[in-house]
Image 1 (cartoon, rainbow, N blue to C red):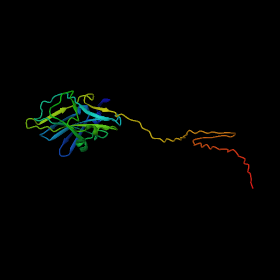
Image 2 (tube, one colour):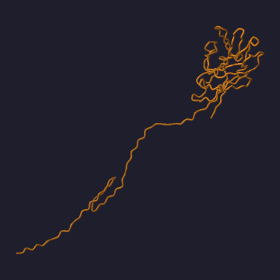
Image 3 (cartoon, rainbow, N blue to C red):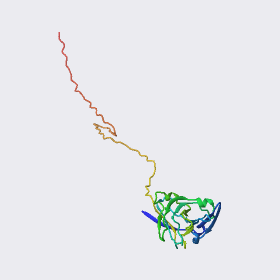
Image 4 (cartoon, rainbow, N blue to C red):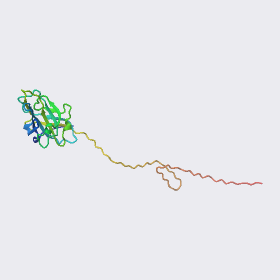
Length: 235
């Protein structure tokens, strides 16, 4: 039987990281900051992060499908020439979204969106053959990163995609099954057995006969008559 669970993200561990080269990473947390985009004039880049507590999944659950439910509140005035937004999954955010290079590069790539999604879009993270289930954390948090690597030009130099205006919109959806179990036990068996063979006994006279799982042999005693003989001697 399949079970589907929707997870809401944690505000304190979600939001965006803004990267300004060569080495500046700045985090902004909360649902209003879940944005990704680029400013090609300044090389500024932003990536959106979502953190979900998936620790209540059964330890032995077989993950069948992992999906990301998208909410896009508004369309920006300018779009890039080529829209490309990737989605990654993993566990790489600590107690909070701190704005580190490890968070920026963390996660395993799953899929790319080549057109701007509308609100209510459900993205199957395994649609291109990758295995998102291997990156779901059954004992802690599972993080989603949405990162823009679109292409613009001098007329399309800045764009931003906002993915959330409420923590109840974007969600992580996991469908799983529980494997059937067969209970087996180990033990020792001891037994005693007795084989009883049929036997018979015969008795004549006074006495007893006992026959237990044996062969009874009967002896026949013959009493021969005694003949008397008279001898005659002659001369």
